[in-house]
Image 1 (cartoon, helix red, strand yellow):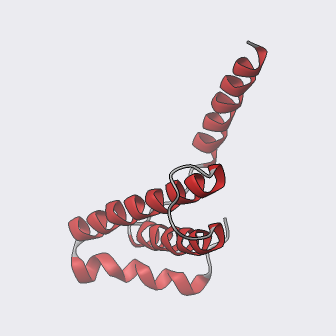
Image 2 (tube, rainbow, N blue to C red):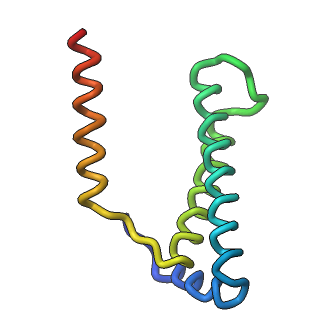
Length: 101
């Protein structure tokens, strides 16, 4: 994941609002990201119509993802490649097991 250098301005956020508020902002942005992803899934499946196009919700998804990454930068969070790889292997194994049944 390539984070543009300009986004490092968010590292100042906790000093301005406090670490508790920065964590709350992350939680709120994660919820908004989840809602945007769910709306796209509903659009793609065609069930429970949400009243807009996948493209509109994709734009919202990207905005919310950017907000989550901004909060992660503020809190000094970084992806862990080892954990990600381990989780991918576990998930892949489960999917393969489901296909075999």
